[in-house]
Image (cartoon, rainbow, N blue to C red; front, top):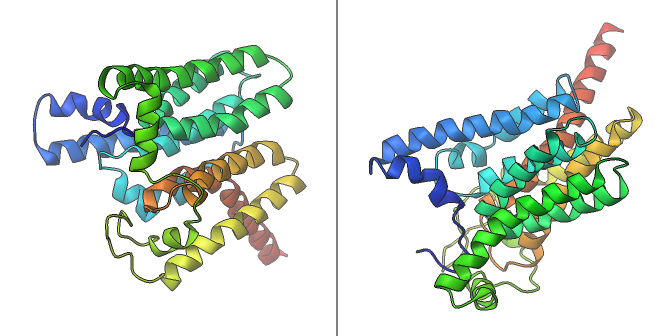
Length: 294
């Protein structure tokens, strides 16, 4: 059911296929190809920022998780939101090096805002702060690109609100009621949902916390901290830190503002945190190799 909080990103994504056939197999194959290309494209942006092994390792860490594999061929928005966030942060960092970077930034945020407008708005906050504080040149162009990207999804959502949902404010209110938003602490619910089910809501029994999944989950902040420490020592902290901050920002609303859990909600955080985690992995492997040679 296309309720108030929904957005048109996924319908637009599947439109080329469902307009021709109702075959689920064809749709799955199409989404597998599209999500794979999106994974490659999003992380490729970072190769100009951090050439070497770090970016392929980050893509491998994120792409091999059960979430990426499970949702890669499903008509769900979160995976594309996650990859658009990775690309957006990369394009922002390339803003002073490439004239086309603002176009990529606007396009990434447009995809994100069409898929999940609220996620795009949250992701834009650290990007705007970085543009205002951290960029020396092309600041206006970068901020304009962010505004254009947000306007695509939010503009469509606002027009649709007026035409189908009784106005923008009414739709916002209905969306909040549908998603049970407000001050909530749902960390435990997310921990219980780490290995499924896909939605801990509407009476679904999430079960107990999986020790294996919890170990993986708790390793993420530890490895992220190690990656940031390593990047600081190697004087590459700024891009890795921006990825980490943006990932944390995109996780906070789901951990403290929505009172139910779904594993896919945190996919943008996992995608962005794969970069500092890859920094820790690459550095650790390099130290191990040098130690063996010694």
